[in-house]
Length: 342
Image 1 (cartoon, one colour):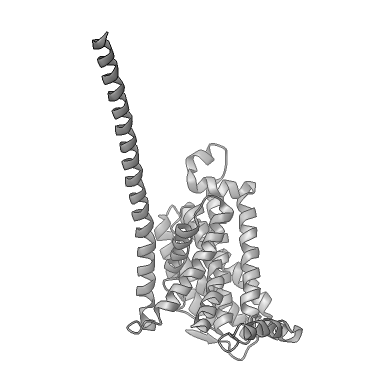
Image 2 (cartoon, rainbow, N blue to C red; image 1 turned 90 degrees about the vertical axis):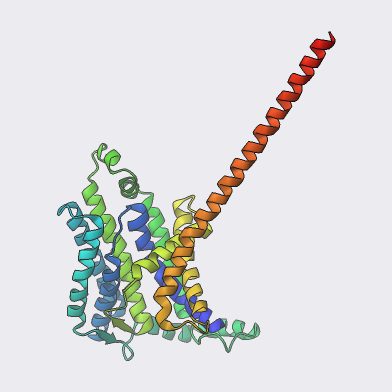
């Protein structure tokens, strides 16, 4: 159980980067971008092929980010310059990327078992510095040494990388360009009145969004030691689930809090899926059904809670009005009685 939870947290932190990309397109730009299902695989494919051909994992990962950025920009161009519906633009790019990803990989699956990746290098460095031994000794002292993986590299390094991306995203959204992006998602007509080019902002926003998605795909390919052409199917739902769960649990009062909520939502989502798959009557093939169920619950429960709060607030207001009316009637009765006495 502990090992499964540990693995869920590791993968959740990596998928959180993808969820941040989905947050930028769906929440900031208000753009239903289905390119995500394709750009996630593009990032994985580019990184896997370049690593397999001897490129350093860092450069392969950077190339994957650039490929994702280009894919997002093309989606933006289809919508802004081609005047194609936002939803259809994403669908068209997602379909096109399926063939492009096959071209990049040359086959449907690229294994990385015998290649050095970022995570193998991280693990080697952790072993050489003694960091793993330190954390393993703590785990052994707590009686959990047998349940946890041998290396802590993935968890610690990915947590730092994801936190850094979150901080950069927060800072970017507070800059002039970031504020213009937020305004574009809220009210395009208003931001146009300030001479802002909403087309360029939309293209830039979708490019950054899919760059983050591709980065997550590159990390997942190196984490799982393979890239597959079908690994992006339903990725947009996973991203939305992470965003919705995080917002429902942690709130959205500020940008910094919301981005942290998205990361938390991604981790919680992976933990829930991991626990659900341990139920006897559920199988690995039921993951999409589990994902859909989680999203439905995450969408319905907050609305149900808000409805109950509204009802309680209305009942309270009604009770206060009745109480005030009762006081007024009592005072009127006292005045009538005193006038009759006089």
